Amino acid sequence: MANIPSLPGHESASIGKMLERLPGVTSSPEGGYRLNGSEAIVYIDGIKQQVPAEVLHSILESMPASAIEEVELVSLPGSNYDMTKNPVIHIHKPKSVIRKSAFLYF
Image (tube, rainbow, N blue to C red):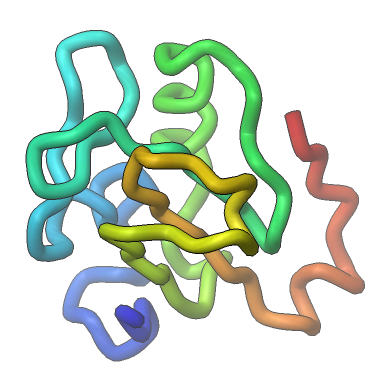
């Protein structure tokens, strides 16, 4: 787990930029994200994001990193992630942000 508020520069960076600073995470040419070289599936607060990779990338680039609390990087996901073989990037927002926002999950 990466505690985002403890990372330098999180106040001014987007979620997308902060993801790329985490070990093993890179942007893919298709617009999505890779974890340790494999295409990753992105979850936000337990909800699998099922939009095209380029749309997800645009969404995460437009959201401030200060809106998230931590990011979980799962190289070998288990049954709690739909039995996928792909790695998972799970973004967690603080409970207070979830209650206050009208964040849309795609």
